Image 1 (cartoon, one colour):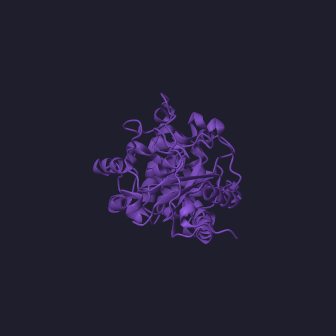
Image 2 (spheres, one colour):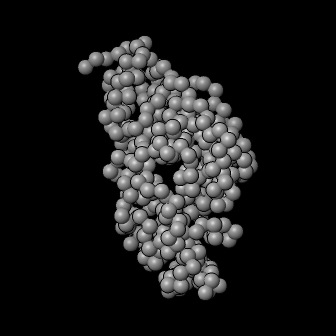
Image 3 (cartoon, one colour):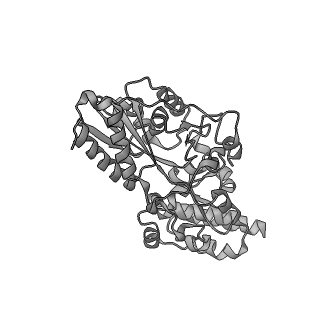
Length: 355
């Protein structure tokens, strides 16, 4: 086995070794960035929090100092290896919004939880890197307070579009991200330029106008935030905009013109489970905690819990206009969770008004 010295670790040979390892592990993109450079994303984060646009996600405010710069996470870090895993869907997510009696679940949540998948592979990559190149390493997925999207932009994987998500010229809107920080001095790749141009598709399609301006998001009006992070009743002003979305919202991602270059994911664990491709709302409304946990085993949906999930389902039932779902809503009126019971009442009122 060839071992490079730390002086040689910045060479193209070292980077080629890392890229080859990343490809062998199933990653679709790999780039390198310095972590001791200026970090303008810090100012944007501070403005986001100061404006209260993080809503009830208090953990963003609590970890703001650690998010302020990659080296705030680890002072000894010198370089970042940023990895991307394609989760491109095999069909247009916007089509699911047309079948109002069936649920629309965000593309990323229709398969297994990507956090576990990526973290395991990052650890294997980090182990190979350390064994071959030396240095110290730490791995990160988006559960850690590392701002991976601006890091991915610096590493050339894509750019943060007007919807604030990463856009890739190769994979469109569909990349999961992970990072390995290292004490090695690796030559950085060229940062990716912004290719949004005059396009406003992602801003204009948003059903709740959650973008105060291009490149700015108010999470309090975002359907992904409301269906996943927000506890308690969803404000009535946003309920009809939910349509049949019960976990997340893909509208701003799916409409991006760069998706014309995207391709369906090759990763078996990320393929949509048939049970989660537009499941009937009536079946989901009937889930108790045990059935919920069984259906969403190894799924990111599991973390929001049965009550918040069924709350979302009942809002979707209210928006369905389907009188055949009256009984499904009525059955939840006496639910042990008050938020679920209130959502059932709202759904019945909507269906009665429609009828």
